[in-house]
Length: 331
Image (cartoon, rainbow, N blue to C red):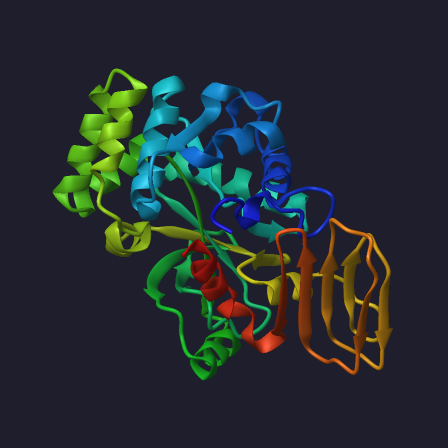
């Protein structure tokens, strides 16, 4: 829900997605170099879930302005406390990554490469299946002698299934994870050269602001624009690290089902109370907050999520439509 988004929920294990991302970040850098940018209504939740995080390292977003405003604000703020030349890794807290060590290795590699080349380094996932819900990065030629780093030849919007299947089979495309590394100095130079002048003006205003209130007012003046359109698609010298490990952009409950281990019938049971399954297979049952038993009979490809806040029942193929329920609840 809008009041308690997915990054704060324990969907995989005893840690929330935010806490899991924080643990991954600790493999890359020291605790005093980790920052979290979040909506101002979630600052207290972040502080509660990450008690070791300095309060000054929680960057408050006064309203939603999409990824361009969010990232530019965060990078400028971090640079003002550290250095314009220190490389920053921008990662998402709602991505699930099982192999933390591989993630850390790739992130450190990308940071070093960004420092050496003064380029923005994107992260792209090697597809293990057709990915129609993901934007794609078209790989160009290999970068020097590095096996898993490529020039970026272009971007493709979320394709239809058959086209996504051809992308996967070709081996020429990566899922665009939306994460990247760059120093503020590098990012600023790309904004100056390739983005609309308005974004450079916004950065100059941020650089000269003297207080939180002033920063808040500047942020609220930002237009809503995704970084892919405002900057990345216009930059000619992007590099991408091809990552080969389990990764999911957890956008719906079927994603949670896909990445977890199931029982012999293909059911995923996540519950502290009793679940009775009769002639049922390939279902996801999640229950918490009460002690009543749940029985499923003759079901297949069904999702049941039962919490004190509400009960959800949906077919696995329609899980993406749950966002419409959230929109209706907001009314």
